Image (cartoon, rainbow, N blue to C red; front, side, top):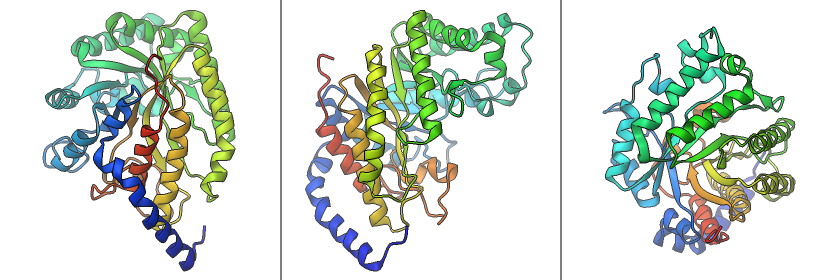
Length: 380
């Protein structure tokens, strides 16, 4: 989208006028305290990296200071995935132990992400190459993993993404992998949740996926597939408590934000209505905004990101069934988006509430106002 100098100056002037009105609650109240007004909590993904590196580590005091000001919940970005805890068939919990220990020292609750991430490309090499000789062999591996993780952390983990991304967006069906073939897709899912319930009876058990409210054919098939999965859980009595909505929302078009929202909101609400109608709770587990199609100009881009994020959060927070809200990182300095989906102009993605220098952006204020204006879930 081409932006003239006049449009750029007008956008910056509008931003300068609008920001002070939003700044008061943003500066005086943390995002977590605003969430708690309506019976929710706010948190963030956090990473671990070796001492002396700068990769979003809990050893970075500017990073941890931001987390400690804004959040009461933490979730590991990667450090409980099989690629970290089982790079080899043996367990290695050192990185996640460091996150849990830090969280306990500073009063954070911790989510567990994830007991199994289904797409084969995210398996450790040894698992991707595993040729199971029987269903029993696969079952033994999975049951042992769940029991070991849940047994190690006990009540230190209050909620688990038991299974992550089971649905293939292009087909709406359960992904075909060596693990799902060994057991059968539904049998695999049921085994994971039943084992997690047995091993962590106190914990909230979540099915987590990244279906999004944007209107593409894959998004439509993805949502339909997730809904069928959730319906199947209910019919079979599988112990799933909530749907984790990752909420990696995407500015894929250079349309005005209001037009994008008008296209998305109705179908998305119908999907959420069906989910809660089945008796599930909702969580926002991985919120950020992919500004792929937004202009290079930071003032215009930040305003688009803030407005889009606010519109999405307003929809989600209108549901009393929505509980915890977690951002997938608090600062652009460490956002996965820049490397995962680079912008054509090669600039840093600006999809988190704080910029690369830990300064609050308009998205932070939009998040604050969305949480402040949310429907209460007290008594939900």
